[in-house]
Amino acid sequence: MMRDVAIVGTGYSAIGRALDTTVGALTLDACKAALNEAGLTPKDVDGMATYPAAGDSVPCFYVVESLGIPRLDWFEDLFGWMPAGITPVIAAAHAVARGACDVAITFRSVKRNRERPPGIGYGFRVPGDMQFRAPFGDPMTSQWLAMWARRHMHTYGTTEEQLGSIAVTFRHHATMNPDAPLRVPITLDDYFASRVVTTPFRLLDCDFPVDGAGAVVITTLERARDLKTKPVKVLAGEFATGPRPDWDQWEDLTFMASKYCAENLWRRSGLKPDDLDLAELYDGFSWLALCWLEDLGICPKGEGGPFIADGNVAIGGTIPANTHGGSLSGGRLHAISHVIECARQLRGECGDRQVKDARVGVVTAGGGLMAGALLLEGNV
Amino acid sequence: MSDRPLPLPDPETAFFWEATARRQLEILRCQTCKTWVHYPKPSCWNCSSGDLKPERVSGRGTVYSYTVTHQDVPGYTAPFAVVIVELEEQAGLRMVSNVVDVPPEDVRIGMPVEVTFQPVAEDVWLPLFKKR
Image 1 (spheres, each protein chain N blue to C red):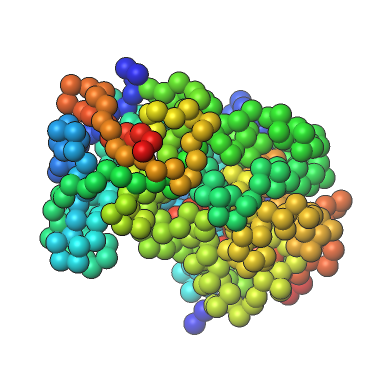
Image 2 (cartoon, rainbow over the protein chains, first blue to last red; image 1 turned 90 degrees about the vertical axis):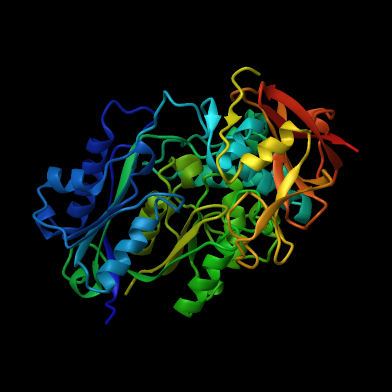
């Protein structure tokens, strides 16, 4: 029997450009903050999940030992290509729902490796599929997704100004978020003045690398009623990829795995895009948020650019998005920050940037070949 | 260009690099349903047949998408263009490459191109493209 589950605790470590501390210490700070918020202690925790890949974080065992958690009845260290920030949250929600554990903590922590150049596929001889990219000067995720964005621009007429409006809108939201590392307002002129990374992406189209950690605690809706926070119910947590999940061979680079994920989300939840009050959309690059808007059905396919430029995703617009500033201005925490922001919005705790009467929100993560999404509901 | 990463061929990909070293472009083709399969895999994505053999392709295609990169990566000095070329043999049959005879800022989607080969090591020739 599946149980109703809720997010009951959210927490951050310090978030900064180059913090003089370890990723383990950041992780513990975030986990303690999330447990404290819920009024729980490490002794209550019996489930855990994280994404410790790429050597930028710590695995579950580090946290179990450091927090003195007596026992876990379910845990997962997740690796590989997947939406890194949201996958552990969805996995934990499912684990609690099926009774594998009762109180699960999930986290995503990142500490930048400043020694390593960006991209993958370096070395004298490159194995696997990267042998068909790296020798051609194509080792970086930014390049792969830039070519998706370019194809979208070619097919639908999406413009650089429209991409810029994403960066400007999310920065405006970050000015109202004391946790955001980038809080100085920007204009389209600032956007066009930022250096080109790989066309059509400028620096302000790229998420802002930070050191930091975010954690989320999940338990049953029943237990949530006795805790300190207002419960935020998990209505659905879905994943998808599609045929031929490869950065170049994907059937059509103008849509992403988010299309398939959205189909799962709406079918299994019984909700529709019109039911949403806000959207926290993965924005590792600006265009990803645009494509998620379209693929979720929030606006028609191909109209994401004008939709954003017309102000629909601004706070006060028809569907406020990335109300914390997203990854572009809130820092690259791989969407765990999107989960935290959505939960806090649905509890009505977001001050100047609060979306009025927010009841249902979507959180998405992943770009290109991989997609994950959560539907959350407040006032339950 | 001395720090350009080079491919590490394996049993699935060796045919490709052996062909380019002969200045030929070969792609795996399913012998059961005739689907072209790239990147090389031991099973056809269309029909699951394991009967795949390299066959020579025309080397003609069009630019499906591109990006002009403005920061250096190993072996490449900015700005330079990376392209995805769709080969004429099959819709969606694509490969990452560069266009050698067009300035980066002039590369466009839909540009017709054909393969050319450039040596980058004693045993490695890269399949690059030129405008046609």
